[in-house]
Amino acid sequence: MEKPNDSSKTKLEDFALIEAALAGDEVAAGTIRCPETNAKLEAVLRNRGASDTEAKDITADLWTDCFDSREGRRPLLEKFSGKGSLNAFLTRTALNRLIDYKRRQKFRGELPASQNMDQPGDAFDSLPGEDSPGDSEDRLVGLLRDAMLAAFSRIDPEKLVVLKLVKVHGLDQELAGRMWNWSQSKVSRNISAVMEEIRDATMSELKRIDPWLELRWEDFVGLCKQSSDLFS
Amino acid sequence: MTNEIDILDRFLQTFSPEVGGRSSETLTSEMETKLKQLSAGQLPDKERSEVSRELLTNQNAVNFLLNQLDG
Image: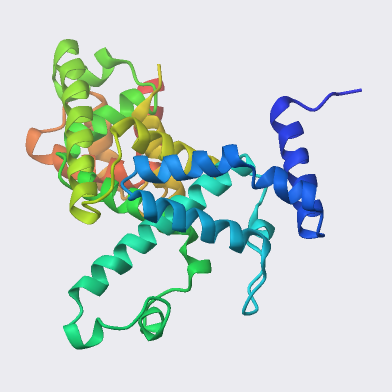
């Protein structure tokens, strides 16, 4: 009999936990909402630029939405697809909410004073064009994509295509050099230089879009990989 | 070692296919000629930019070029 690998075993455990928790099993709910996961979520948010209060508030709201079905919305946990772990799902959702929160905060700061005196959660939240919190799940993908597209648009297409032919399509550097009449060492230098350009331009664009966001290049690449794994 | 550009490319193909190289527009005979020239290292400098843009957005162009190199 084929044994499930660690990943599929974890997913089965995640689904079983969610099902039990949503059916009212307090132990299952407590396992999902354990102090360790709570602390981890808060830490991720703080590391990405949230204040301590913001991290605690966003995490607390997230837990509420995980289990509650208010105002006709489904519990958040019902949206867990099984692609990736439950912890990854919770972390992404928390990050999406942080992005959403910070952008609303910035938008609120830009409103005229007469419109800026309302309390959070009132008419401000229903301004035309504002999504409900339940619709905020893909903010992260949008941010990563916009930053990368802006970065790529600044790169010389010739240099970018040589990089892709070699690194994505596996073309030999010497062969690429022959097509462009470049030496192999020039191809190699070009690849390193373009990767650096992409890295710098992407990070600069991220700062332009969301100046509060604390993200290293390694985090950016990791989130891109996770996003592709989750949604493709 | 992680191939970062591979990860970024896959991301763009998933979330921005129109610029991720997933377009499958038919190649014009003029573009095929230019790709053949490129594969032979004979494409004039001034035409490389246009061909590069095609290669970045049209998977058919990449496949055609790679086939030329295989042949």
